[in-house]
Length: 362
Image 1: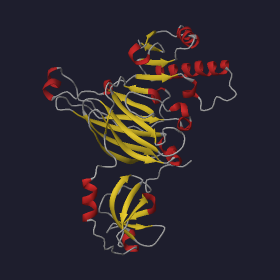
Image 2: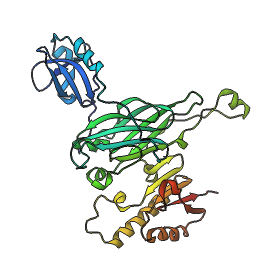
Image 3: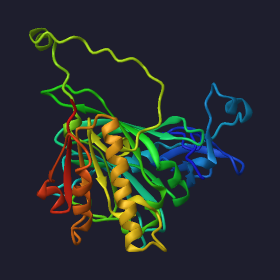
Image 4: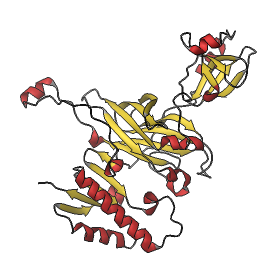
């Protein structure tokens, strides 16, 4: 499996002195296109588009500097001026007007080729579908299942920001990660959000996974990180004294494998589980309608049991419209549990294709 590499995704900035790894010479970074592509200005006056994995930054305090003690006579002042006059190649895009999606924060994967979705590069974006600016920090999992900082930045209210352009071989490195979000609001203060995400690798190779949305003009795989309900206010000292609140102490705990229901969480104690068969298995070849139905019911039961074990309060199950067989089977299955209620989910958000399950505890 081809994971993203911490060293291969070294962050470069304009003005960095770099050495080519696969050929002689080097130069100065004159333009940053993405975390995987930069332009290098060389002594002979050329600007070469170069993959970041093919160069190394020459740091005066690094071993690389001692190994490659070369100076590159490059004047990039005129080059950088021309780049500054041109619009950025990675602009923040505005969300489509009138988007009906639930306000919140999203991670989007957009194919460069909008006709053949399963070929070509993928653009990765953070979408800020809210009225407040945010700061974000993206952590990805490496081949040792350790997290490393991949990218950080800011996204204005109602905008999307490109954080990377990746080839298909690097998609395996985007199946598990964390996006940390800090909301900036002049009127209120919020605790940081810590959004774990897990995406089945098979989704990227299925054309049906790329859907239209109200957030983007292109078809994309869009993963909801959290909605605005997940934001928790930080009370001021005066308010805290008035209601006699005790300070909240948090102890560091050993990281444990994320629960099944945790992979579908959209906020504290709330989750959305899509029971469409394409979300449960990567390949339906050879499966009969009855086989698929059994897989859906089994997945429903597993996620519900996981929700109960982890004290979730609400789980929305997307069953689709269809002929009602799956919905009726879910309602029948719920009768085997105590302390549960069900009702139709939001028509505005899901139409008639979802059911809310409310979980109560003694």
